[in-house]
Image (cartoon, rainbow, N blue to C red; front, side, top):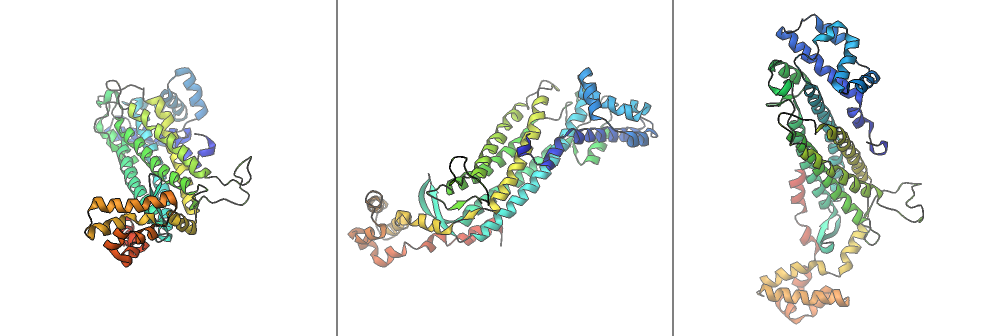
Length: 431
């Protein structure tokens, strides 16, 4: 995490204060459950609850000596609690604390990301309604294809981000598990009731088989979901980058007063936000690889997953959180140029209506092979000689003979291509 791309709300989740506070709550709840079972005296619970605390600097100092973070934490807590601290961590192992805490942090991060996605969805929806009927050029392979509307582009982004919200909500559910099962996960020295009690109080589900650690397929699903969201984010960013190219200029990132585009060229207005989002997406995607590799651990546990998770859990969530907020602002403030969209649509002098002519010819009795030959022959004159497509079709005796002037001209009506926009919008946004 670096400050440039970090929002405090997400960073707080991964700071030592929050982590150790969760550890303390796990240990305290476990003591409460043990007291209900009669394993430890009930009268120690108010003491542990009231006096329980920690000192981060002290934990760091102890860890330098003992080389174990949970032992260092427990030692610091004991210095606050006093003699009653001997009842803390009874029957538990370090992974009970570490894994249950990590699940809580990932749930907290998911909640922030779900809020981000809701903001993005609201912004995309508003712009889609604004530009539902704003005609622009649809492209395939980067080449003019057939007319669409800018609202349809936005509707596509909305539908994809809505799927991503469903994915993230499911990943949140998958990761919301805790484990208080002791060494190798057999509950030999701790009753399963303790796990049920702690998880219930923390809003988690008990892990069915923890083997001492929570299985890392859950974490892999979570990080891969973040990677999918990042990829969707990049798809939007790349489209905006293309649309802002000087020779296209159908949409443009908002350029604020006083903003500078280049240290060398004062005229520049660069798509820096979209390019930044592309870079952020590359980074988030890269973090799902170690998450997948963490799934395969030795026997009931090892800690080969531990060090990498200390990186990727904060980094992936912080980067995606920042990126979604940036994407939201980019979409809300995006400058759209409908006149340039029409200019570009007309650039190919009617070629974008070629499929309608092809279909009309087949419906008029011309074989598909001959119809394709006739349309392509006239289309190549536009490409190679700068001719006007409608003019060439009207002058072609075979095309004219099959369709007549009125039907040829009807095929150049934009309304034909856009007649089902409302249907698509109802599918995406509802009535």
